[in-house]
View (cartoon, rainbow, N blue to C red):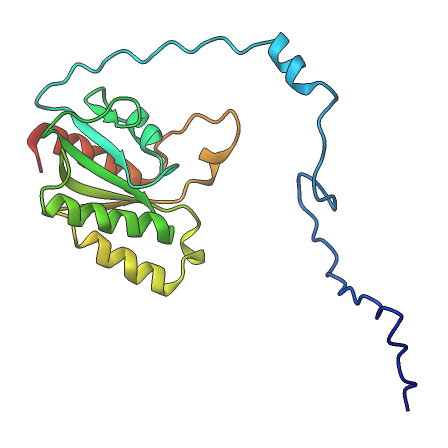
Length: 200
């Protein structure tokens, strides 16, 4: 039987122990790391040269814009693999009534954003015409769940044409220049060029 607690002595605080922190390949078992003293001053002493602004795009009837449904979906990579008539909308906004391909990833938020933009395009709320969708796999195909695949298919059907770009792990490595290695990607790039030239 427990002895009664003295009401004048505060009860000891019970602290729940957390599980040990899992190893991180960059930080190891540490939660964070600190940079050197006066880091900002050191960086300021060796400033990064200013980037030259991108040259304006020569817009023609064959210009096709790649618009990202969300950030980091690969519009600049895809544009870099295509001809100059395929323009990354992050570099220069699409012209009024210009033709655009929407690019999204297989993440839930990017697919949902693509669905919302399809609805806006259908009701004339976008300043450009969405002529198709490119879904870029952001992880290996065996790691995408069935509900996500089903949702991706339903979003794909909201567009006149929809294509997929397979997951390319090598593109994520430092110093790697993306090249079209898979047959599917080469086919998608040809289709993008055809859409730019013929409209479909």
